[in-house]
Amino acid sequence: MKTSATLLFSALAVASVSATPLNNTARSGPGKRGLAWPFYNAPLNPGAMNTNPGTVNLIYDYETFSPPSTKGAGGLAFIGMQRCLDCTSSPIAQLKARQQQLGFVTVFTLNEPDINGITPQQAAQWYIQNINPLAIKKALPAVTSSATAGQGLDWVAQMITACAGQCFFDYINLHHYGSSFAQFQNYVNAAHARFPQFQIVITEFALQNPPGGQADQIAFYKQAIPFLDSASFVEMYFPFVATSPALLSANDPAAVSFVGTGSTLYNNDGTVSAVGKLFMQ
Image 1 (cartoon, one colour):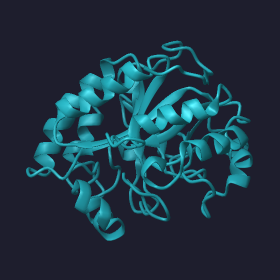
Image 2 (tube, rainbow, N blue to C red; image 1 turned 120 degrees about the vertical axis):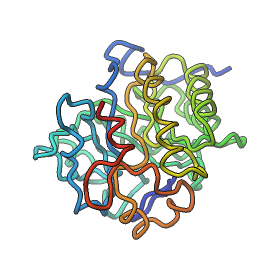
Image 3 (cartoon, rainbow, N blue to C red; image 1 turned 60 degrees about the vertical axis):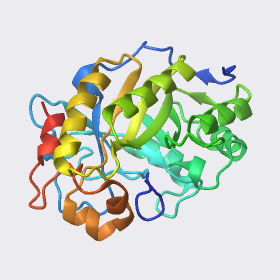
Image 4 (cartoon, helix red, strand yellow; image 1 turned 90 degrees about the vertical axis):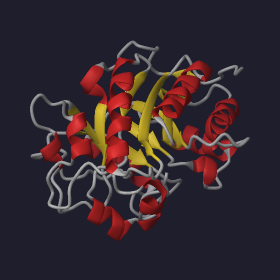
């Protein structure tokens, strides 16, 4: 999805260095699951999805300031995200201080730069200067599943080449919106085949505005969850999106037109939706 004050949708010689060898600290099963938490979610309680047996235990909010769950009733581990080169809400000059203050141990970077006018070369220079110095787990920018030359996985490959061995990272970061589980599975497997040295995180995924609405999303996630849980190369995954239909419609109409409201993890009354409950099992 897109970024600004609102969400955005959403044969390589690897020259970069991973801070963690493949599978050395890989999560397994439910420990991989988390919430993509938009900024307008104040009425909702992230802790509602962190009940026993604790299958959802991660959260990110597209920012380097924490959502209400961190060190609070939600009990979810916060992952910071520097989603743009220099956001008003998350200034790049404050990244190091916020990481030290909040103690997050993983950082996600740039949200869909492959379709937002940021070149791989620009991203590599920015990453070396601003992300490398953080002595924590790091993800390369989150890219779309676009198959257009220079976008998606091609953009990632070009950034790695531009890094010339000077970008230190642990994760390849993917988004996917498609028409079927098979399409999603093929994309994730293709990413692993292209970048086998690195773990994968999937920070946004859902069907793209399916005709059956929530019922179709439920059928999709019932296939996607066991696949992702069993894939040793997938470190974390976050369905789109941890909000309610009403809040998504009021705050991000572009997302509604793109993905619909059937994948939201909450109901309008603040209870966990049928989709959300799938991730709590």
